Image (cartoon, rainbow, N blue to C red; front, side, top):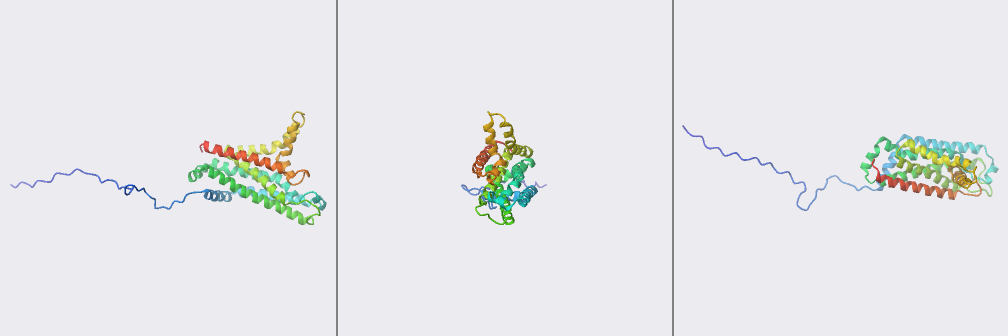
Length: 285
């Protein structure tokens, strides 16, 4: 009987080492997908896409345009040629702006607060971790849109009023400056609403706060001027509230052009924007 040949001893299993993804020593992995560094232009493009693609923008801007032009032409049809010897042809737009400014304030609030309400702000900050860049882009895009739309509406009202009343009156006031200052004022109110919306992160609360900022200074002077001790405060508040400020810009008060009112709003808006930037980095989403 033959003995079977001896079998070789089994070898221990040795797992293959994982591939070295780092390549040669001293080198790092490079993705084959091209990566482009992000910048403010990308954030501006994103915010422009958002603001022009949502229905709230079209509705609020559409109502704003209707109020300014429709009320402006209605007032213009009730005036006479001699009225524009002292008033600029853009004065009828002032009536529409009293109501139209609420539309821009509401849109400014919704530009930021709506994203917090739906939770989409998390996606926005994931795509652009630099939060200050996102807020800066929102402010720039919104201000550009609101200023252009406001200036065009005021200009159209002034142009149509001029045609309805026989053109410029001899020695009449010029109305080019009212287009720029009027559009600047209501646009800054919208930016102020945007900053408040960014700080409060709640649409209804921010809109209510902005309505208080706009309306209360127009109501409180009636009560403050009753007492001698608060009369000075009431007079200042009456001069610088939103309605009277627009009236001065459009020549309703012949002694003022509304310059100081515009500068005050610039300061208040700048302070609110600084506060929005400061809180943006300190709070979670």
